[in-house]
Amino acid sequence: MSIVLINPNLVAQRNDPFTTGIVYMPISLAYLAAALRGAGHVLQVIDAYAAAPRQARREGNFNFYGLTEAEVAARIPVDTRVVFVYAINLTNHLSTLAMVRAARVAAPAAKVVVVENTQAVTAYALSQVAAEFYAVGADWVLTGEPERRALRLLEALHSDDRAALRMIDGLGGPDFYNLPAGFMDEKQLDELPFPAWDLFPLENYWSLQFAHGPLSARRYLPLLTSRGCPYPCGFCVVPATNRQKWRPRSAGNVVDEMEHFQRSLGVGEFHIEDLDPTILDGRTRAICAEIQRRGLQVTWKIAAGTKVETMRDEETIDQMAAAGCRYISISPETGSPRLLKLMRKPFDLKHAVRLVERMNQVGICSQACFVLGYPGETDEDRRLTRELVHDLTKVGVDEVALFIITPVPGSSIHDQFSGYQSLSELNFSPAWRQDYAELARFRLRLYVSFLLWKLRYHPLKLLRQPFNFLRRRFETKMEMVPYRALALRWLAR
Image (cartoon, rainbow, N blue to C red; front, side, top):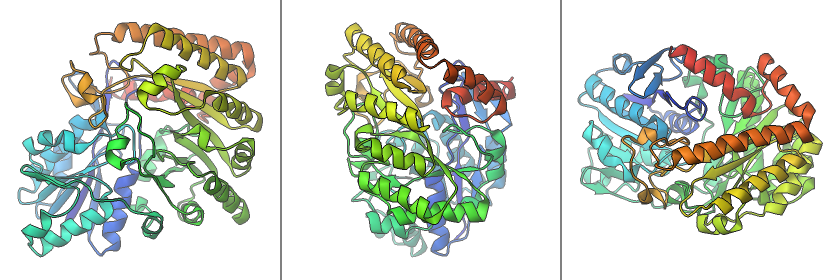
């Protein structure tokens, strides 16, 4: 059975070059490719972005990077039986639709399946927006973890068992939808083959010299050490896609992957993209101990964030630093205890300050992420956020990220917003919000205050940033983002 897997274009909003256009390597698609290949299927991967990352075109308010729709269609064999299109991120929605159209034109007899990304806060619940995919030619959406479900789908197609097909959990079509029935456990995750990165144009990713996490090496790869998240945050899609279930891989299996790609691809830097990698403090320490036991010389960075309370104390931070951890992102979201309750986000503000101070002492760069404009937020809540940013800056946080809330399909606050025209507009600078100008002004003022506080408390850190930018050895995302924004804007000029 001829199978094609497609990663869509990178899409950036033209008036928002700083918070859109972030490059995420498609790790869940690489896992799916490995699972299909491991089961004996012959497949082709088309990474519409990375195949031509320096090719750009303008469509309305967006810049698209990578192959055109026609170029993707030309790469799909006409006798292809199944096309899996990966819905990697919400902001890339317009391109995901375009990939479905390309597949339908190139292989009219193929079954086109849109695959949900369950392991990113930047993704979206496909069951909420499936009609848009069906309207442009998709046959099904596949929600939940795709590896085993995709294999059952292919088996049903091979045997032409329509009844079995409609019983696959997580599968939906124009006239039916089956909720995902469960999740893989630790043993099953350890049994998965490592992501099939050999099928992707890795050199094109590496040649960009920017990534999601701060990039300080020529070769890097993303890493998923666990799946899911146990928390019910109201602004996030993950409670819908993972039902508050967290499942870890074993420490040995995680380090096996690091060692495998270091030996086979020469990768020395890993960006951890888990939703919450440190939920079990003992496992975190076990990973560190295993890296040290094997003598692996690797750098690793928690790029997508983690729950700071799950790192139990300073000793855990010390062990992480000793094992090569050089960057940790945490997400206080707000300095307001009242707003944290509204968000259903448990967070220990004092613990965060204490551990960020320790990160600063042992050479781990830290990021603190905040959201602005959550329903019910007041001026007093924003004042408390400003105070927390000050306190974290004083003890050494290296950067802050300030995101304006956007209604992700699948989040509990999704229906409380209106005014956008396309799902690709649902980014962290939602200019369509009526209060956007007010929130953007507050965000800008707080960024300026952060830099002034950093200059006051840690002037050498601030002075080092221009040198890191010029050397393209980034310790923080804040150093890398201007380079990425300039590069993408130059390509789209």
